[in-house]
Amino acid sequence: MQKRLAGWLIVAAGLAIIPSVVRPAVGQPPTGRASGVARMPDGKPNLNGVWQTLNTANWDLEPHAAAPSPVLALGAAGAIPPGLGVVQGGPIPYLPQALARKHENAKNWLTADPEVKCYLPGVPRATYMPHPFQIVQSRNVILIAYQYASASRTIPLKARTEEAAVDTWMGDSVGRWDGDTLVVDSESFNDSTWFDRAGNYHSGALRVVERYTPIDANIIQYEATIEDPKVFSRPWTIRMPIYRHVETNAQLIEFKCVEFVEELMYGHLRKK
Amino acid sequence: MSMRHLLHGAAVVVALWWLPAQPAGQGSAPPAAPVAAAWTAPRTPDGQPDIQGIWTNYDPTPFEVRLPTDPRGVNDGTGPSGDFDDTAPRRNQRRRSMVVDPPNGRVPVLPWAEAERDLNLTRIRDAWEYQTPWDRCITRGIPGGMFPSGYGNGYRFVQSPGVVAILYEMIHEPRIIPVDGSPHLPSNIRMWNGDSRGRWEGNTLVVDITNYNDKGDIATNAATGRIRGIAHSQELHVVERFTLANPDTLNYEVTITDPKVYSAPWKVVIPLTRDDDYQMFEYACHEGNHAMPNTLSAGRTIDKAGAAASKKQ
Image (cartoon, rainbow over all chains, first blue to last red; front, side, top):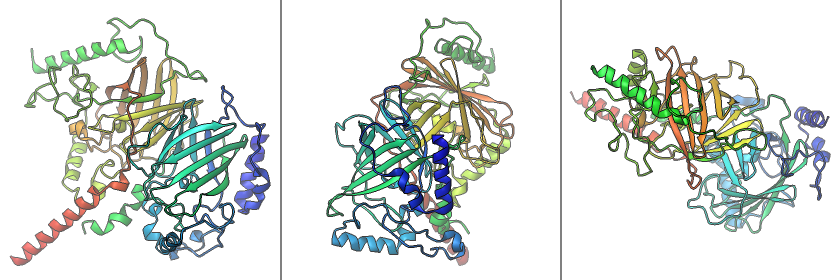
């Protein structure tokens, strides 16, 4: 029954694309142990499965109206869908110079967004890319496999003992349980990823703390707090539900996009 | 005794050497040799044999048995194989080759496929399509991703109910293997790495892979020598067997069948060794692929120089 209900929610939201339809179901994360949450033998929430967000955060974390397709030939099929935004408590608190850089990024989106080149998405962007991801949860480690670009994160459930040896696209993550919430603390990022197609970005000083709170068998309330003193005046938080793919045959399907960008990136170097 | 007989004899030695590491009754090797005392692999909470952790397979064993004409001679285990220089611990130097079947240790590749690869190699400066999927940073393929290279040979196994996941360090591939009895995808979905479906047979994870596209290669790294860059067809069918032989050894045995490219199925055996202290790094391959534009622009520069030279004449 639970499964069917969530399935309906996804169908309804998919048809209507009205985020408010889903909103009442997500609410605030409950404080105690939520009923209906799947559990592991050790009592921890069982997050295993194929998941996906259902919003336009990858277009723009902030509220935005619909806009025409950036690629003329795609017409309505490529038009940018509107969204209420996922940032909590007002606009992203950019430092003045960083805001100018954000606007510059937005202007040059098609040539500058790492997603267009099939680069690794970074965190938290990987979560709300328009692709599913799969959580493989074991007792001491959680693997998140993202369909987009074969990206992944390994999250050991332990305290961080030392700083990562190198900065990376997907960062260095450690996790811990806070009640029913999986808290993932990530740092040691490079400065090459963006947060969305609107040019929201960060520096190598980025730290992201994510909170995955299952509120029933098929919905995870997701929060990510972003801290980067080189770019933002204070930490800020995005928030969105993540839905389970309840189809019985749900699975990731290979999306190796390198092949799709070779002509774009190297076409001018092809032998004529 | 002819060289052919010698090679054959050596292959039997290899097969026997492998036996103790395999549970009785599995594999095609003749039952002989002592089998290690019964050992039960630990289980995950949902009852799968637990093969979780980090495994590596740095291994300088030649991929194929060297031809008698090879100046390096057949690998006899007396010294470094010289196939690639690596500072990681070497192992398995008693083996002539990773290919264990056919018994001569040579991959039965059809001549046309070798010729096509050779032609591709002469054209790598023309366009990316002539390069291997690894050089393009797309994938090292399955099974190619499990064939040891000079570096980046780390694999992290994570299991959850109905799933065995393998994170390949090289080109950062998270591979999800369902072990829930689900069927293969419809045949119109074709992929570089195919569609993996697994099942447990005792301590052995058997994975059946179909639904390949016809753009990938069986092997992409230099250590596979003659087999590097040989393309496969959509008819490729791969069966992998991961056998937990003891707490620190996970044997990998793979059978490759592709009648368009090979005259017979062939088999490779490579052991993985547990190394939970090994640190896997993010291998952002495509993001740092300067070799691709450099190779192509070198080609265009050579073209220009050639055009200028012919103009002068």
